[in-house]
Image (cartoon, rainbow, N blue to C red; front, side, top):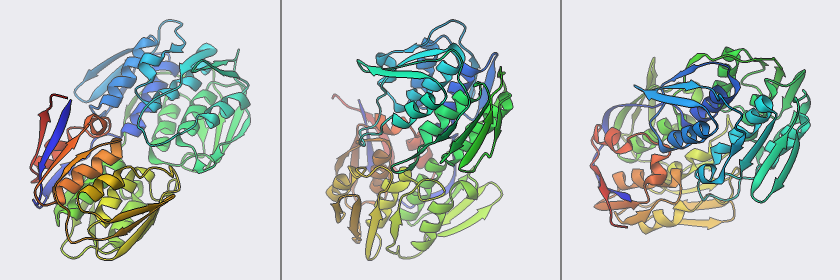
Length: 423
């Protein structure tokens, strides 16, 4: 086990390069490993535990994956393996992405219910519904999802769920539909940047997907997909996290590799909170020269404010002047980090899907624990802004989604050390 030891109070200054998007590379790697008929090469791939875990899942299915200089070389499955077992899938929710492609390519799949962060249930019902609309017979028994179809058939599918479009189901059904017979129309499709990137990758493989970036996707099935070369988009959530870190430390940081259209909602809220953003060709300069202002935030599917930035903005608002409210509409119980921020002196009260934040003058260092990926990120950022020493344990959660976060932060003025523990 490892932890971070952070000596807070340093102003962050300089440039930080954003890594490739975790949320984009995971489904793209699945598509390359299962749907393609020859080698694909993915560039700008972050070195993350989630990527390594998914690589192990895909290798277990028969793919061959080689990492070299930030790129993945993926040779697709070469034997009829259709089972993704519990021992591999239990480690991450994104393993569910193999379900649709396996049925489309091999005609059947047996996939364990996935694991991952403890931020409440994220059901797979829309994944199953989508595959059933494509003609698959799906059963759930003994912790596994069984799906079978001689060949999937195009259909009209609505993937708008209880809390809006499902990113995972959109990706899963879109991948499966590329090899289905006929035309599939997905209504209520997710529009997140990483869904857009996946669709672009599939088209480069030979798929026929129209309406990319909109809530209606039209997919004309093809008989075969081929390997291709693709550069994964930059990670908008990592970029947003570093933007918040600059804001909370009264910093002046240039965040390199992000485009404004990827992060519009986050940018708007930071500006509302008093942060200056100056965009240039390759990124954005984030400057905080004054007092942070209280604002209200409501999470929503893209292009709304992302749930994956909710924890980080809560950290920022905990030291903003006045009263702020955050409404979590995507994962309504995703507030575990509030208690840890309160340990550092924040004043946050929870009521259902809302958090009420009264800004305090400063946070104080304390021992805290990461409960999930984004909760871990906000505790690191809060530790940078706090007075004194903060220790963040269970940082394996953070390593799932942030590539060498302590090195990047230290390069712009932070004082953070990764330490081995006995527990």
